[in-house]
Amino acid sequence: MRTGKQAEGARCVMVVGTSSGAGKSLLATALCRYYARQGLKVAPFKAQNMSNNARVVATPDGRLGEIGSAQYFQALAAGAEPDVRMNPLLLKPEADTRSQVVLLGQVSHELGALPWHERGGRVWPVVAQALDELRASHDVVVIEGAGSPAEINLQHSDIVNLRVARHAGARCLLVTDIDRGGAFAHLYGTWALLPEAERALIRGFVLNKFRGDAALLAPAPQMLARLTGVPVVATVPMVRGHGLPEEDGVFDASPSGGGAAVRVTVAVIAYPRISNLDEFQPLRQVPGVRLVWARHPADCAGADWLVLPGSKATAADLAWLRATGLDRTVAEHAARGGRVLGVCGGLQMLGEALVDPHGIDGNAPGLGLLPLVTVFAPDKTVRRTRTRFGAMQGAWQPLAGVEVDGYEIRHGQTAQHPAMAAKGDIAREVIPGLAWQNPAGNVLGLYLHGLFEDARAMQALFGDGGRSLTSVFDALADLVGRHFDPGVLDALVVP
Image 1: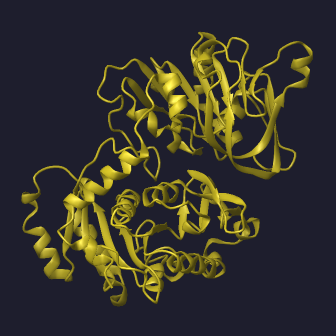
Image 2: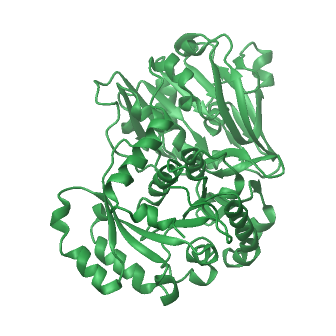
Image 3: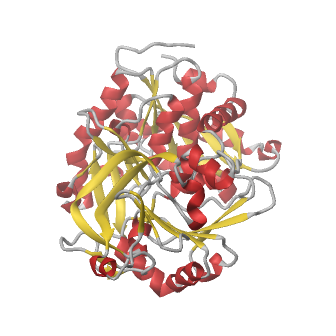
């Protein structure tokens, strides 16, 4: 069903939601795959994403930059090369009232210094141009909104919801999480708060995360259609273990371990400014592996591995570790010979000290499990990396010689602590400049993100390469194909 590009550019389908967590990202990913399987050239787009889950992608001028992980996966689902124009503005929270601003993949200190309400006018031309360029080179653009389009305190400065839809002439689906309750009120209330011209953009309501007998919903969908003129076009069931990370945080509480008896429990420390938590999602798909998000020492009881993930505020999250007592939990686990893995910010925490001469993150003593020191630098390292583990020992020996692909997003350079090295206390450097082990071999610090997304590393560590992204995307496309009313999805992209 190839429609071809129209004179005004690609046909645009937009997914907006009644709230965060309604399922916009997952539905947009499914639609990217669905339309790509129709033989269409598809690109995802989200004008502004607020997330500390980011990936390294290409920029139009040949450099590397960052976009939100959701758009990265949507691009892969669409069979497209991920591009910073697919998420031109990324906000990475550093504190409750402060975010790092990433524009077209690069950190913008100028925009970061502006008050929130003053950014829209500066950013909108960049957002519109990025969308226009994608439309000019694709058949379909699947657009994801943010939060809710009916946040009436933000409508005057909107650059991510229905202003984007108006600019692109998008046909919109409004999705709600029916599992929360109040779904019909959420849909009606959102629709009612929209200006009349924007209501006309809503082509269908989607009830998402439904559990039970859909026949019991009647007559509510029909009543809602009479009130609004908008039909309920899909009732999508709750999907556990779909294979993609949750966009809005550590929400995935579905059973892990693939239904097999638990043989390894991995506890990931979920500190307040955790970043790139999506890279641990593949662990949920490995038979016999149980993934736990740990916020208290009790959450780590019985864990075989403790993982310190990335952090957007390493010194602050290290202080949180100490305040909760998790620092002692990690130290005791390591002393017993348990496996400890630190990734990026987690690696930095495992060292002896964080040194911040430029005011980037903060000075702090480390946990002292690796004889390393990290110095934060103004320049940010953003790159894709293919490397190979060298000689390994102890618990992490299965990774010896394994080639892995991943990415780096970080401030800071880490090296041996000079005074400790002079006394003979030296960490084993298993990847030059990127990974170190303690002498006992059970503590590993790694700057490379994506270890658990690499089938070779997963095979070495667990004897299972994990579920392929191809199967994940195809299953999502099949899901929407089954649960949308016949002809609805195709009609959205017909001129």
